[in-house]
Image (cartoon, rainbow, N blue to C red; front, top):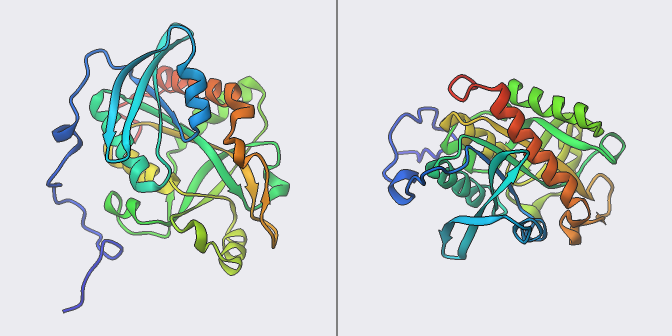
Length: 266
């Protein structure tokens, strides 16, 4: 009998044995908006600000990840550091949603595949190639997954209002950082991918499955578009643009809360 894996299984209707609410308690008055990034520097910078308080922790074998609350433009917003890689990032999302988050904004760096199009711009992913595994546990198999158009529109309007340059396009989600070969990079570029990262497809899938409005934006940290690897501010993990990126994420969260009905987005 042939073994069927999750990559061939279209019926995902069976209930899970363990659910986020089995391991994570709902927190009274947890902020409806939650923002996350992968940069320890950015999180530390904002966690140290006046009037920011820790309101929860995400527990893993790697250690506890604090969840903080900040008041931005008279709106309470939760924020925390996501772990790199699709499975760990999705777990964090699942658990803060169980705590009470209803809108989620994620941002982080990426590898640039088309420097000419994205240089100096925020990248808005409108779809992601599913070269990872986690998304297949939430959404039936397909080569790509689309971002929700209304969430993309919210992000685009915020960027326009703030006069930030941006580009919309496809991203490539991979979980094999040391197996991004030159032939594969060329293929993804030909398919229209602007960037490569490790979480977008999975986060689009889990947010659709949980019916949680979700925005993600990317900024270029290194360039994989040429035959040699060009490092940029990768070692800084976005610290130079910390205030800009975090403020943009906060603005997106407020805009989602104002413009999107949680129950009807997805």
